[in-house]
Length: 362
Image (cartoon, rainbow, N blue to C red; front, side, top):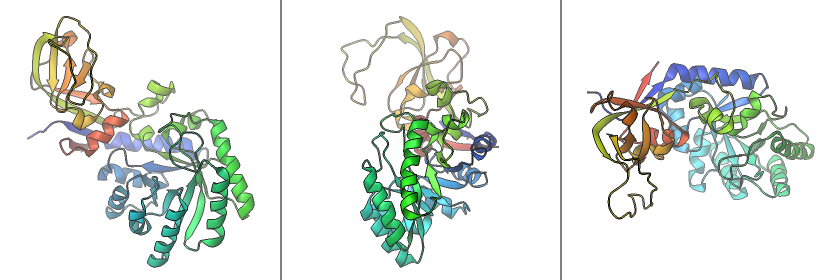
């Protein structure tokens, strides 16, 4: 029996997107860590990254990297969230590279590496203004880098990195990349060697790859959403990414009710199921449809992209997506399936929901 909601994964288009992205990064001598966190490490998608030109498999979640290890991934695994002290043993066991910003964590990592008889490579993070992880005081970053180089035996300094656009919405620019390069050069002068990796960020940094404005010393990026969804390039940044498929993931839901109803709620307005007071527009009686999934399945339904022209998203409760279908009311009926493109938020929710079936097609 076919069940819904259903997330359809187009594996062939994912593989083509990875190849297309890596052709552009390879031309600039930039290695790519393919980020699997956004789709919750769906095994077939992880395998596609492992068999691709990407040089690393990356996630912020150690359990996802463990899953990648367990299905036999051959590429080095890369932890892109500063590890908790409590997960250090698993980091050493499963992960080759990690991002770091706390000396106490690095000290614990050194002890665990010695215990397990392994080495582990780290990138120290510089906060260039987005105000998430990393050293704000760059002298402290340089001091710790030198300390690792000279006094750590099992933890190895691979390089430095930064993150932009995820919290503070700071744009990744060549100027920001040059700030990172300047720090790298100070470290290199002090340790007497070239750093392996200067990691210039994530998907938000790839626009500089497309227009070739990224400074030459940036040689590593951590890319997930830009490969998997690719919908934000044009919508948010006005960047042409026509070479990438936008349908790697498609969410399909079933209509469970169609009725003519007022477009403005009747009665005294209060709070919705999530404690918010909504804004409504009175457009008279309109044909509405309910689809059997809601915010617990996809998060912000407002960022879903209906693939049927004339379908408008009005909102959602926990378990119901509410649509205006007035323009196409003669073409839809109860039991019909509607398809939606996903934003990053929708992907994260849908791939982690036990209620959403995953279907992989080639």
